Length: 175
Image (cartoon, rainbow, N blue to C red; front, side, top):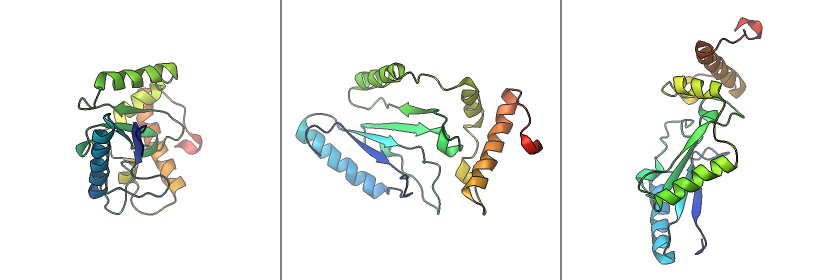
């Protein structure tokens, strides 16, 4: 870390290892970043990349990083928890407590417009709106079976939800 460091990316659960950072680890990182902010006289942000937040197994709980560090931006994608590979639908949280909130929020909104990914397809917006409060893929993936079978089951689940919003043709095999 140098005086030029503006952000640190944290990915927990981590891809590809699946490691989940403990509260103790996140607190230690937060303490280090606060000390470096004081030393360098500028904010250092954690960009908490959380597309796998709901895909934690073996009783692990994923700590919510903004609880431990004020200058945290949270990036989330429904494409993982609902098994929608390739669908770019999610959100970025910029908490009010973030240093220079107006500039940070403006920069993120501006970047989204310039990079032309302002809106996800309307079908997926509707599906996510209807499914957001339902159990995540990890909650539905109990028991045995390969990840391909699990992903297929999740797609059927989403297709059913989408079918309530939009009339869709039958899937091969009548499912």
